[in-house]
Amino acid sequence: MHPLFLFLSFVALLSALGVVFAKNPVHSVLFLILTFFTLSGHYLLLNAQFLAAVNIIVYAGAIMVLFLFVIMFLNLNVDTEPHKPAMAKIAAAVAGGSLLLILVAALKDIVPTGVAAGTPFNSQIGMVDQLGLKLYTDFLLPFELASVLFLIAMVGAVMLGKREAGERNF
Image 1 (spheres, rainbow, N blue to C red):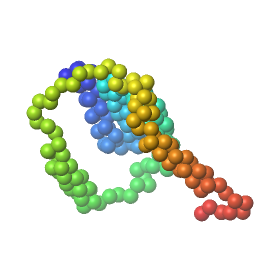
Image 2 (cartoon, one colour):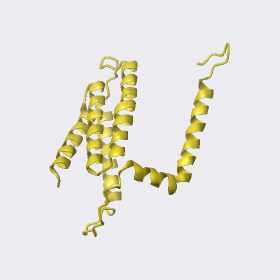
Image 3 (cartoon, rainbow, N blue to C red):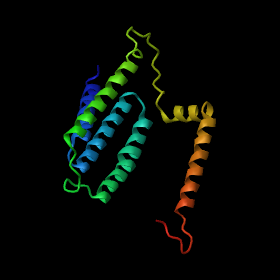
Image 4 (spheres, helix red, strand yellow):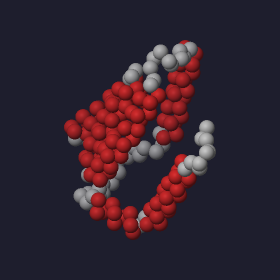
């Protein structure tokens, strides 16, 4: 295995654990940003430069700014959080463990155990021109349907956000 892959995987796992176990929500968001950067490193190792750039711009940039804004807006701190009883913590651990057990049982037959035949390596597979060619030829109809769906969602958001004179919203 490539040493950079092992390093990125190790950092990704540690930062993902930091997201879950961080006491401060801002630290949790910062760990999530680090996780996104390590996943972008994995995309670069897979020769998917466009996906790595989009991951950094969209997720590590825009979505994390939104998460951080919501956390700051809610002003979460330990004093306002209600104390959870021990029974709720035990129930959460049992529910999480049973979910893990179900996932492992459902996915155990999916992973092939034999050696797969190798396919020839195409160095142009993750490039933007190949992605655009595939998107606008083979997947033109789903692409256009998604764009129409986004247009409908934007019109709906504008209509919901539009206020009439004298109208109160909640």
